[in-house]
Image 1: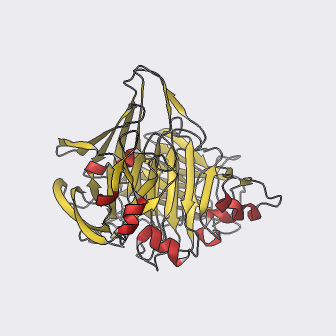
Image 2: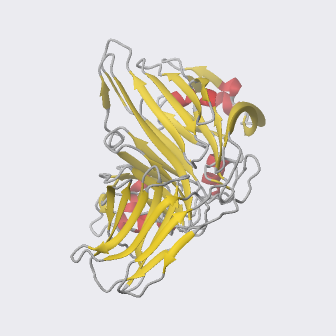
Image 3: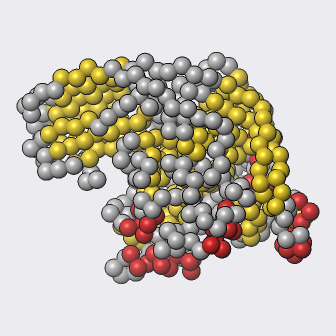
Length: 474
């Protein structure tokens, strides 16, 4: 796995005003941390990418997208080359984000708190056959924004226009746009980075400028390796989706998953399922969330205690699908996708404006759809039970009367309060008030003891309740 640029370890300063009390009193914590100073810039650069040489095998399909003549590709034997790509580098206190703007793609995402690369970057980018309408896919890694169909769509293969839309002390933004050639849709994706946040923000807009209604799909495809392991996913990588059930899509290579259901059902319970963890994926395949309950999903490496999360408006983005190689992919699979026979793979956690790959969204003439979403790494939480654009949280019951709260902010945050109390007696056991804190600030596990069985964690922002969590068993 290649890392782009150097990283450094933040030196935290955490001021905790705590009162360690007996069991009859509330454990109180107040966080008021001084954030670090750091660079904040965007600059044009280039990146050298090792890939197969396929340019001479390109043709145009009926819609005008590039397609690959695989006979010609075999003739040139996919000779490896190193190609230079124009790139844009964002950097702030907590992240380094590299875009390939003329491909509409975030390519590298380094979390400076840990120094880890969170995205899949193949050793040698490969050309693969695909059931999409272009008939191929360039496995370049990073993150894709795809229209108008499933299986990577077609716009990944189109040239994207781009411009630096803002370069101010408060935000750095790049607007990337593409014309979808089959139906005439237009998409823009504005990537923004802020000086005090570990996330990148994506403002996405799709417009139908034609005089006909268009039925289409849009999927974001983040290719993740949480924790930055250079060998690929770790066995205890957890695929965290807030859903009660998942659906094994009806494709032959997915049939091994049916063995995890007592009646070989395609609709299966996800809570407590073996399919939550990579080590139980016997092969590659697709697994679709049946119904999302919250607007986030994540992949988390328990070996590295680090994950990455996508946060989005659920009412616009109801779809989530997992695809990965499985725990012990063949050397051929490893080579096909990464150019390295020893790489252990990555996970694609697709997010769509439709529930699944068989559903389509309709845009009438002149209509548009738009939303804002965020993606950020987080660490030292033991997993993920809830996330929004500000914070990632877990709430565990670690023993018969013992509880633990863990949190990782997505940047410098304030105005958040966490309350642990009994649902019946309203007795408070923990009160954590965040005046100011930041990623890497030395946050610890906040523990308390309660003999009451109905304890819940209440999350508030500026006095407004956001979410109530019941404790989970680690």
